[in-house]
Length: 360
Image: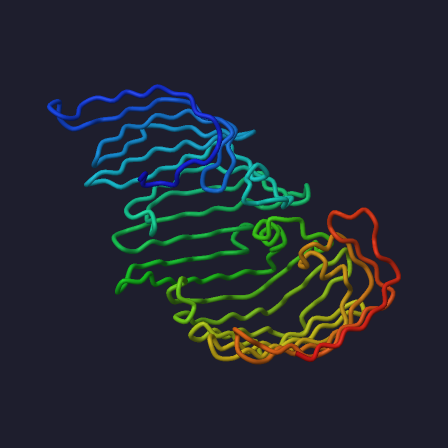
């Protein structure tokens, strides 16, 4: 098997040279060719030119170039008994052409070089990526940068967004057959809406602002939630909905211990909307989440799958308790004079009034 993911689909044309084997010594395979309309690591590529050399104990890619509508990704690789290395060069790749970002209205250019070494299931390496000419909904966003450095069994990542208004530092270290990680992040009046949209892979309209000031620290083996601990303090949180913001009235404290999450109090309010919540989760043991308040349906629409449009308001008083595998949901929801449209439908439901009581 190849030491990297196999490309999927598409068409390939190339030249194959096989030599050696038997009395002629170790077999060697050389391939040079072109491909088009294929998928690799979840990204769709228009075309590529490539060449590789294969021997039973060696796999080398002197150069491969993958093309999208704009920009390219150059790949070089060497895997043998002494060296395991995979190198990426990005030249003018556009964020809006990346399938991983879905329908997010984030635009920009990715340039830089990353070199991964060792076991690709736990990549270590060095390099830097720069995101420039960034826009969100056609408005300029400050540039961003990722720097990666590795030494021995330790890898470090530095993230810098919005002229250092958002900073992150991640340390990953192999320790006792596990990967121990420590993540520290801080933000000062940072606009997170573009990054939230990119992470969700969709436009989050009418949510047009997520302004945050706070700090977050977490450590443990991120592949084992029960090993994780940490805390966060969000001093200010402002959610903007087309000029109708929801604002936190006090610090939001978050505690994480052995994978459990405790948020003793959240209160957001503004423009006739109000939301209260508290969260207590103990992994494999218990869930206790309470939420109440009145909130506009269009605030919730970006986060409800299959809901294309919504207006009106929802009054809610909900409580979820029990075990994480089987919890009970109690409370009630009510809507008055609301309207909504399901994705894929042309017509919308209007003047909807409903009340839902939950008892289990």
